[in-house]
Amino acid sequence: MDTVKFPASLFSLLLLLLSGVSSYTVFEITVPSAGQVGVYGRAVVLSCSFPVGSSWDVGSTMITWQHNLEVVHSFYHNLDQLGRQSPHYADRTSLYHEEMLKGNASLRLERVTLKDEGVYTCLVSTQIGSQKKSFRLKVAAFFPEPHLHISLLHNGQVDLLLTSQGGYPSPSLQWLIGNTEDVTEVTQTQLEQDENTKLYSVNSKLTLTRGTNSFITFILKNEDLGQEIRRNINLFSENEETGGLQARHQLVIFVVLLFVMVNSAAVVTFLFRRRKQNKFNKKDNKTANSRMMTGNMAALLHTL
Image (tube, rainbow, N blue to C red; front, top):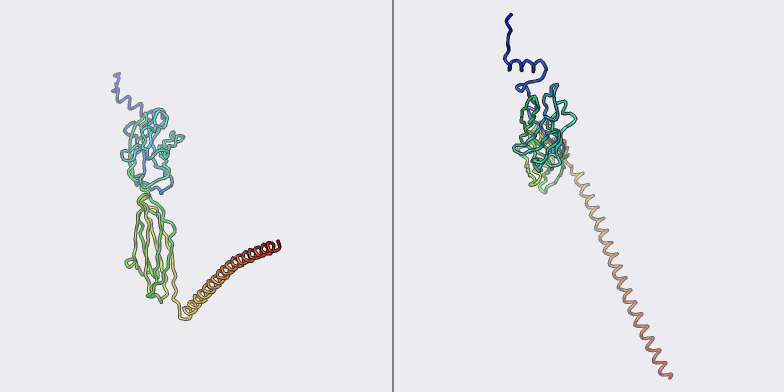
């Protein structure tokens, strides 16, 4: 019987397949294909995983994270190696060491800033293979609750001003009257970006003609975070009787304030005069006492 001889390379490949260990060509790491979004000021976990197989060894594993050309975090020889880490990431990064045996190479980044935006690369190398993949990190900040300012102008118009500070990126705004009529185009909106934080402040003003009842809806959206702020504003026109009553109330308040001011002035004047009179009385008493002492001395000398 003839003996079949296999090439050495084929025999080695057969052993790898039989042992259940993945070859270099099938070693593949996993990162978010659609990228990730981090919230400004909070922590974000940049996801990355790798196959470990049955013969994985932490001592032969190397994990490196990069942001563009900057080194964010490195791990090899079973230790975090931060000697070449960019100063921008100092004291803000960590790996999940206890979960590496499960193939977890994710990076936790603390206190996210807008400067952290960009492309991140996860590189993993083990005894069974190596690979690197990249994805994009977006950073966004929630807009806080808007503040409403209402101003009544001399021409009878009403200004509605809504402001919100500290969000990112720039939001989309919409003004509706009666939930159907879009009046966004007639509003005045200003966006300002902080020089240091790069966060946005938004001021949006809608001017209305006084004398009509209005049901208004203000909508602010931050698409990256799925944030939507929707606020309803109800305005009711004033009739003459209400306006007259309000004017009378204002007049009463003015009279009361005037009365308080006049009485306060009278009290201050009284106290000032009282204090001045006391000074004069003390001066007169001193003069009288001096004259009395002079008279007594003269009488004594005359007696002598």
